[in-house]
Image (cartoon, rainbow, N blue to C red; front, top):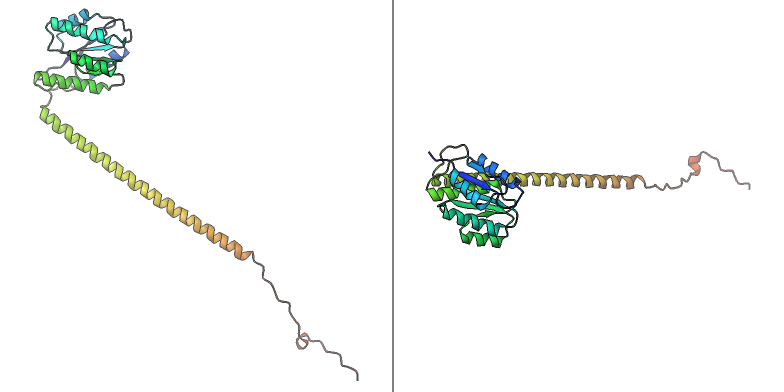
Length: 230
């Protein structure tokens, strides 16, 4: 049975903002990992000592003070001195990309910036653990993990299902839009026809018919012409 991954979340230095660290700690715990949180203002020595005592697999540092180029190397060097070189040192904070690259070259694991999804962090730790120990880590509910090939097939199947679902939704949206467009065109055409018919009717009823003057004939008028005197 695969064991749970043990993670130490630490806040080294004078950084007093721990909200992000607590959010990550809670997310990793919800993901099925055992999490130990050191609290604020821990020195590199205290963090590594806690990692030794708790026998953790991962040390994750949250650094927002700008001292990442000092604190990460100090913790990493201390871990090597204490025989923890096979453990993962990762973390995050307000770290420029060029500093992330420099720390990675020093031996620090992947680093995460503000706005990173906690799911991405948990997935990275799982993948590192699986590669390091040659076993699939426990799932979120603590059950043994599936083999990598099986997980890859499941992920591929899930992605295919999502793609199919999106394609169907797009097709339905296009059909609905086409139906609305056709209905609107039909309504517009009917409205124009009605207006034209009304306009034509109005012009026809407004014309005045000129009547010719009636000429009464002598025979038809019933009048008797006076006789001429001779």
